[in-house]
Length: 66
Image (cartoon, rainbow, N blue to C red; front, top):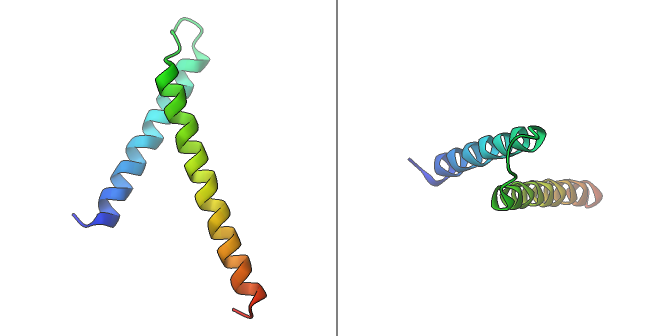
């Protein structure tokens, strides 16, 4: 597997873990695992930052005539 495929598998695993964390948070009978919530927040922060960087890159490209 190349790096892009490995990154995609890692991202899929992280998204699945985030879904599981949200399901656990919605279930009042479950004990909230602080580490899992932290992983969820880390993932969301990384995704948000990546999207913002891509938006700025594309908008910057438009501003410079691209």
